[in-house]
Image (cartoon, rainbow, N blue to C red; front, top):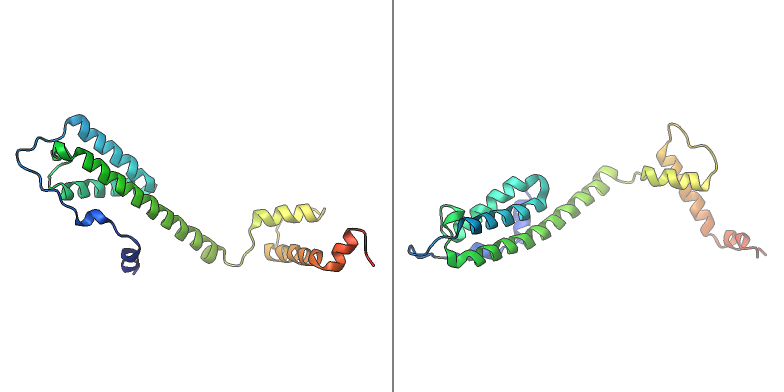
Length: 168
């Protein structure tokens, strides 16, 4: 299970913060509430397909931290703190998104691709090195080995000297 490992990587300090509003505090204005929702929606968009889920969790975080039932009930005096909290969440989401991107890239390279050659670059190298027609049904591994063999031959000192015109 990945969750315990993620908890070691991800730590969000606002999990320990709670604002205790005074019942006499006036709530934020409609415009401020809309601004908070807009900023939260933009931040949630960093994870693309998880936008709606992340947005719900941001709203929940705001309700819990500010001890309110609705976003519109956040006290006026905590409006800036709410925006700062969303900004902290944005930074954490950026780090998390980078983490996810690295996992996806590693999975694609190590699991899906493995030791297989990258077909587009193999074709480009083949066409550049050999003036032969490219096969309709290529054996990509064989072509990559041929290209690699040619590269290794070119690295030998004798080939370099011959290629530059001063072979003994």
